[in-house]
Image (cartoon, rainbow, N blue to C red; front, side, top):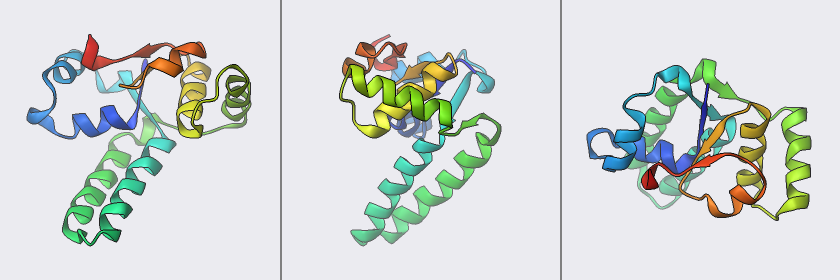
Length: 138
């Protein structure tokens, strides 16, 4: 596993043929085994689904929930947890830059697993020493 995908990348890849050309070009030569998710991505996506549901768009929420279930199954062996070492690394990173909790935990996960964090939001993350890649800007 070389790349830890941020929710914004996962959401773009969900679009399939309609995904941004830069994202499609970046992911095309990669093997599935090159990509991993943090359990935090599942939580972030679930949050978005529940917001849709609360706004009354049950049909759309159900579609996204089914997609989320398929995603969890697809990445089952490449799903990274927040372990003690990740949590402690996150604490160290917070001393360097005040990142939002999810971003900081994703950065800590990438560092602990020697991975590149693939995200559109690279600015603050690069300051804490995590390798980042913005596939929209490749």
